[in-house]
Structure formats: structure tokens, C-alpha cells
Amino acid sequence: MRVIAGTARSINLITPKGFDTRPTTDKYKETLFNCLQSYIGNSVFVDLFAGSGAIGIEALSRGAAKAYFCDNSKEAVNCIKENLNKTRLSDKAVVYKEDVSFFIKNRIKETPDIIFIDPPFKLHLEKDVIPLLDSLKLIGEDTIIVVECDYDAGFDFLDELNLEIFKIKEYKTNKHVFIQKKGI
Image 1 (tube, helix red, strand yellow):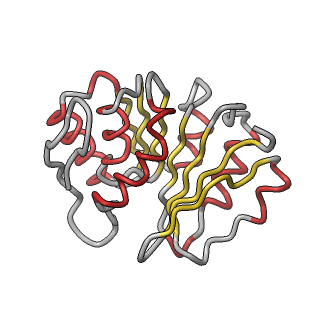
Image 2 (spheres, one colour):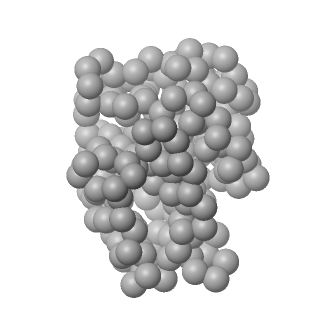
């Protein structure tokens, strides 16, 4: 796994050992960032359930001004920090080893431009995380939320939050669901 584009292009990243983390493949990551590229410059990027940090690091490499990383695994957080040091992007990053709900309630002090959510697939935690972000007014008019999930993930709950899906990218084993405020 490597950084695909930007200032840290071609730098290889490490991933946490074991099967608790599913790194996004380079092919899926490239497709994701092709969709996000026009929104990345000078953005505030939030990487939830960050694992290796590859997605947030890719955003920083491509011009995001700041990235928040959150994972509750000590090994994942150590991996993120090592990858940030390798890519020389640590000065633009804030890394937390915390439960995502605690992190959302206590750490994000500005409205993010892009929020990437990649929870364990079968738990469908996006159903808890997105309403929490909404209740704390962390989803701005221009905020883009991207959820990496399995095909079974449902998003019926978005209607009551005044959010809508504006794009879905399907892959062999999963999908990226792009969400924003209705009427944008």
C-alpha cells in the first residue's frame, strides 16, 4: 500500500498486523480520490476508524490543510503516527486513540470539509456516527461524508437528517457512499 499522488507520492505505508484492519486497496483509493479531488485543497479532513491512516494521509498529500485521525486501537494509532512521520505530514495531522463517539463529541472543534467513515462492515456503525455528527452540527452545508461499507449497508436514516446520497461507487467487495446535505 502506498500514497498514490501529491507531495508524498509513492511512499509505502505500513498497516497494523492482524485482521482487524482492512486497508483500502490502491485501486479503490484512486477511484475515491478522483471523486474527491476538487474538494481536497485546503480542506479539513476527518478519518474515522482510521486503521493505517492511508485515506487521511492521501488527503494531506493531495493538499488538505489538516487531518484528524481517530481509531481505538493502540496498534493502529502507532501505525498512523509512523506513516505520518514517513510521509513528513505529521505537522498537519492530529491523531487520537479514542472511541469514535467520544472523539466526535470532544475533539472536532471546526466544521470538517470531508468526513471519511470506514467502520467494521458488519457492525454498520455509520447509523450511529452520522446522526451524532449531525446532532453536534459538524455537518456543514458543504461537508461531504464518505462511508466505506459492505453492500448490505442501508441509509434510510438519512432522510430524517436532511442528508442525501449523491454518488455511490461500487467495487468487487464493497462500496463508497457519498453523502451531503439535501439540496446542495
